[in-house]
Image 1 (cartoon, rainbow, N blue to C red):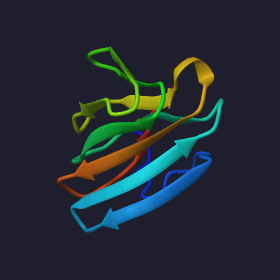
Image 2: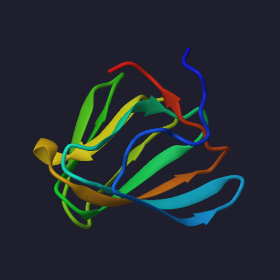
Image 3: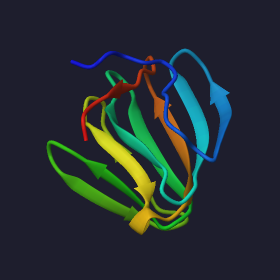
Image 4: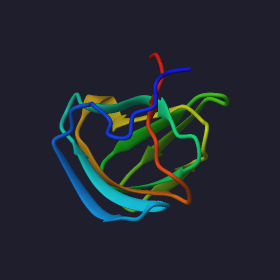
Length: 111
C-alpha cells in the first residue's frame, strides 16, 4: 500500500479551497494542458466531480470506467476506487471537487 498524503504533490494551474471541515471539503482545480490529477484513491471520502470547463475525463479502476464530462456534467467516484482526472485529449479543464463525508486522504498508486 502506498503512503498516505494529506497534501498531494502534483502540478495544477490553480487550486482554490472553497470550504473545508474535518469531514467535508470543496476545492476547485484548474488543469493546464498536459496536467492531470494522477492515479490515487481515498480511504473514506467519495469524490463528486463537477465539470466547470471541459471537456475532461475521469477514469477509474476496478472496475474500469471512463467518464467524459463537459461543463455542467458530473460523476461520483466512491471511496477506495483508484481514479485519475485530466482534460480530454491532454487539454486543460476546470472542475469542482466535493469530497466527503469522512476524513480526506490522498493515496497515490502506480500508473
